[in-house]
Length: 530
Image 1: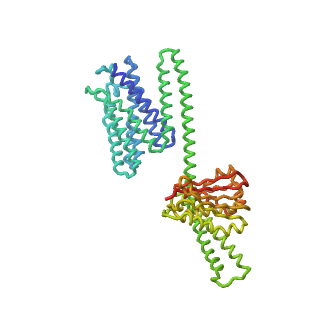
Image 2: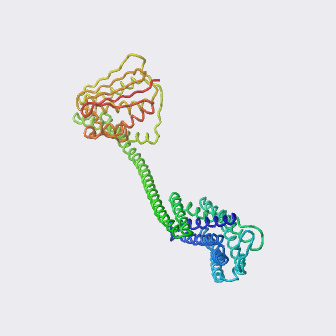
Image 3: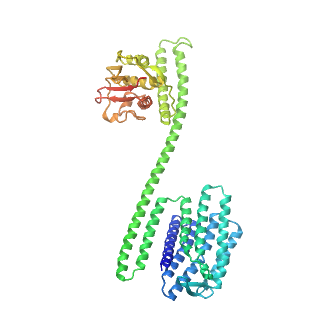
């Protein structure tokens, strides 16, 4: 009886797998013709499997014969639905395919009324370890020899032919699963027939029949891009419910049936809640993924726009600077005295605009890693003095006390770095920021070495200071202070972001200190020496 139990269990597994995949596939899009035929095919296989299971458990002749007739009737449709499904999969549109399909349906429907006669099943007898083994009639032998074998072989031929001809890798993968499922499933099913002809081969191949709906269902799920997480949850839930239902139906008494029925209801509710929660999680993740993809595309378009506009504006500003510089220097003749201040102011404003555009482009390039650095030994003290001198006129114009303090003790301020990047985007930015954000008072620039021998550059001012709220936005892209635009209308918010990126590249540190609003601020840069 161990072997018989194995046959019964494998048939039950086949039935559960078949109906599970059939329901899952058709539920995804029940209007899809391919999904509809797949559901019919797996339903026929499920009926065959459950009837096979009950047949193996039957202990009397009449009951066994009833289940044998049911499984035999359902087996008529499995190869036809398979062939129908394959023709849709491989897009077989020739007239001959429709003729074969129509002929198969006609023959099967003609044989179906004979299921309950001796032309289909002549009766049952004891064979090997089987208590009741069916003997096939003439109608079933004809069906098996021509329809069953013919449709299976021709279906496999269409699959192999399409696999060889297609260049679509996804299509190849899908068809390969179908070929494997067809060979294993129908190959396992064929082991049912030798005993009909008194050939002593037991139908152990039936265990492979489960591979048929599994591989075919997986091919549909995988290559139609259904979400695998929801599929697994649905399969688990549906299988659990079906299993509990079978236990209820097999209960020996009303009390057990009631108890199992309660568990069946609880299992169904739990399964529904599980699937629902997975749906929600998947929907949320897909929504987040969609938003992330959209944000990525928006950022890419924004970067492109920034570079386009930036380069265009930079070109116009460069031409304007050339014109204003030529006018100021008298290349186009002596200017009236009253026009000279306006030209100087226009030149300075154009330079400020060009620097703003360059800051935005520099920040964009830093984010993408497109900035190249020319590292070389440099005298940092000279770089600081040059930058300080360039800002003196700006500080004097505001009436600020503007001082530079350099500690001469110790070794020279020599380090390895990019002089242009450090001078333009770090030193000038910090010094001019201090001047811009100090309405009155003083700005002090200092240079010294720490006890560890690192170069320490600092800019202190008595200006508007930095609030705790603004400190969180410092050194971030576009990180304006809350009221910074009111003080410096030309601020882009990129200056400190760029400075930090450059300092990080030079393996240094940059930080800001302030006691609060209107209490001044101090920016400190530390860099390693050569």
